[in-house]
Image (cartoon, rainbow, N blue to C red):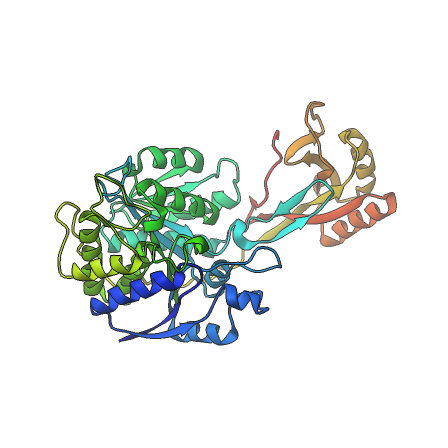
Length: 478
């Protein structure tokens, strides 16, 4: 018997959760359930996080969380509970199986059967943003070695556990050479430890095009957070419907399972909603907690129901479907099929279950860190780089001198082009004078001189070598 936490959510959430629990209980799932309130009611009661301290304690104590979709009110500084839960509990891996149900659900890709494993904690989803000038805002993209190691290792361990033959990595490291470059580098390092599993890397743009056109070319795809968020929805949709997909969010100590669709408040309370997405999440949960026999029974009954043509309104299609049913009636049909297997669709055999254990990160010895310069970001309303360079060179000292100015990443001084459009946001690089060893005092001197000459500095980024390897990007055009 496993004790889990359940949140029925908002909109259609209570209906599809009731249907899901009815099915898995009828199948014999060994569960004890603690229900919590999260979402819209909690938000509107004045809690901007959408969850109470007591609910957090229940989730943390039980470690397994089955969650229906929730509604986050617009405006008012309300935080996304999904993002908060994933990051707070260290749920680093988002797993989304995407398999077509041809010919019962319309798709152009009848042989599609892939799993997207998305990094869940960092990347642009760190949510660190600033307005720096009148014209420019920034969002920090944070990629860590521990984050890369966890998600890539999980992808290969998942492939090994479930008999997948290939793991593919998508990044954009031809442009983001430091951040996506680290993800790709770690992928190659870890792939070498799994010689029995094929591995490959694609640049995200052409990889996404290939996945949308020929998804059967892929097996397991592992990606940083933003790419994974976008492409997992694309993959679910091209199998036939986002509404049929579930996902798991896995950490070292906790796990959350859910549908990938929203709360659809316009359909709430009408006995119309399709519970399949949340049911798929619950099946993943049953596998995770070691109840694979129950998961297999439910999945085969669901497949049998789908091929019988007993469909809710969202997937009902004349000539394919045989009966349009509501949420409750769909659940009753799945229950009636428990113990049966599909005839056309491939029956599932879920022999492997339980946790995928990966090592916790052990920090390596600190690298030798050598300061070699600083990027000073400046708010300046002019448009001629030569004029700002004249002022910036007044900030040189014995150990640091202006070596480059870029605008939105493009080098505009020295030897810039007049055609390059410039905003009011300038990155001004001060590099070590040949033979000099700059210190942070030199950086402070540069900034002090900026005050003297009236240059509006808005942020700095120190430039380092790590064990002799450059740890910063060059300007485009260098």
